[in-house]
Each structure stands twice: as C-alpha cells, then as structure tokens.
Length: 290
Image: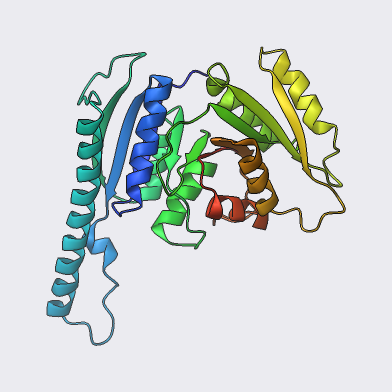
C-alpha cells in the first residue's frame, strides 16, 4: 500500500527531536502527510492513589508538580516541531491535508498514550517511534508495544541522531519469517528510489544460507536488484544483533528492514536479545513489520 499518512509519536523529551525530524524527513521523502502526535498525560492519573499518610494538600502538590511536567513536555515537543518546520519550510496544515503532497500537522490529545496509539495508528500507513525502553508498564514501552503489535502497521524506529537520508541504501535482515515478509512489503515504498539493496542473512538451523538468494530472486520480479550477504554462520556464536549492525555498517546502509517479534502470551514488549540489541544500538532507522 502506498504511504500517504505517517503517524509520528513524540514523548516530549530531548530524544523526541530525532523522532520528529526523522519522521518529517520520511514524510518528505515519500511525499506523505505527517501527523505528529503528542499525548498529554492526565495529571490525576500520574499521581499515586491515596494511601496511609497521604493528605489532600500533599495530593494537590503532587498534581501541581505533575501538571507542570506535562505542560513542559508539551511545550518542548511543540517547540521542536515548530523549529524544524520553519527551518525546512514544511507546509503545516490543520485540516484537509493535500493528497500526494508533503505536509504536516501537530496533534495534542489527553489520555493514555498506548490507547491513543492503537486508535490513531490504525488510521496511518506507517508509524514512527523513538527507541523503546523495553521496561514493562512504562508508558514509552507500552506505546511502542501498541504501535508494533496492535496497529497492524509497519513501524520505523528513529535513531538517536537525525539521518541525512532514508532509504537510499537499504539492508534487509531476512530469515524467511512472516514478520520479516511483512517488513519487506512495507519497504516496497522505498525500493524505487533506492540506489542499493542488500539482503543480509544469518545462516542458522532455521534459516539456510540460500534464503538470501531466494528473497533476491523474488525482489527481481518487482524490478529490484538486490545483492546478498551471509553475515553469520551456524558455527558463529552468538548470532547476535551486533553482527547484523556491523553488516549494515559494512554495506553503508541508511535503513534496516527487519521483522518484529513478541513472545506468545505476553502483552509486554518482549523481543529476542538480538532484536533488542539492534534497537538499542542502531544508529540508522529500523523499519519493522509484525
């Protein structure tokens, strides 16, 4: 499906700068509309429930502190958005974004970030998030989980620093899984403008070495010329994320495409060690499908 609308979720911290800028760069690259969403937490929800020794005055003070924190986060996030849009002459709209053209809108909503991610994310073609924390029950982790696993949409994880380009040199981490296949489907929007595509495969008991060439042959039917590279073999232990990131660096990739996995039966964000290492240490955008 062509990418016409991108949802960019921002937290209101300094790390949000790269998320905003990466998302808007992506929207400009794909000539899509970007909706930058900042969720304001309800201060009453941020205050612990009344317990022994908690007076009304103490509760009021906690609410006041929480309100100031919520307002400061919103101010910082909006300032980052405005600065980028002014500096890069981004067309900002409030209603009726033009179809097939780059534009952006700022959206503030009060509520639970994960619930709003599910609601708004299902009405976007792609979602951009900052790096997840992998700490269960935290709002940032729950929002990442909702975006990755509960919207049915591909998610691009922004790197710590804003990239200069996205999708000119694409690396695909391929293991033949359904999740990786969905990630490749999402990446089709980048292939036409890509100067280089490389299929990276780690040979294992589940993934034969020839899997890389099988994907390359499939992509060739879509007019995509892809190189292949086996970056790890069964004798290499562990077959971790560090080897994948090194392979991306070796080929000069500016976008990594890979599947996102969650442990069956768990709602918390639980990924394999290799995937967590990739998301934790990647310096390029990571496009994930589930």
